[in-house]
Length: 156
Image 1 (cartoon, rainbow, N blue to C red):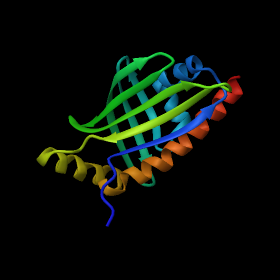
Image 2 (image 1 turned 90 degrees about the vertical axis):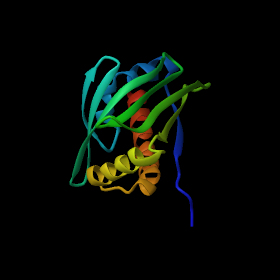
Image 3 (image 1 turned 60 degrees about the vertical axis):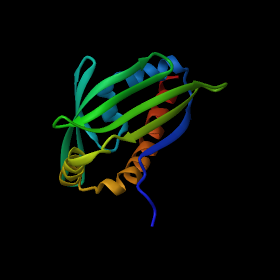
Image 4 (image 1 turned 30 degrees about the vertical axis):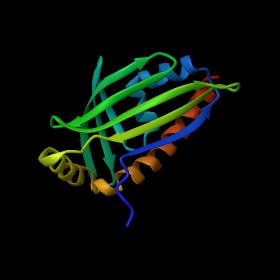
């Protein structure tokens, strides 16, 4: 039996410099264009609310930006009803052709009763058991990165 996966990373080279990729990612409202789950974002400065959908499930995530290092990294923590859920982020590495973008996700549902409640809410809201979330997120990251790359190519 395979243990639970607590973090996932996917990388893809983009045909744009890090500053351009960072500017796109830091405009969190644009995630609607790239993510297969995000359908709407309410931007409130260093905080935002994302509304997500998968099949018949719709849920929201309250997020707080925790890393905003232009041209290098952008990351945010996701909570639901005040419970820690995950950290999402993007590390940017310059390359000869543009930028290697590494999207990462870390499950923050780790301890005690709050963990169990967060996992139960995740199942109810998203239809995905906690043990499967990493695989679902990996597939979503691949889609997100491909769409972001296509946007960067059009902008170049």
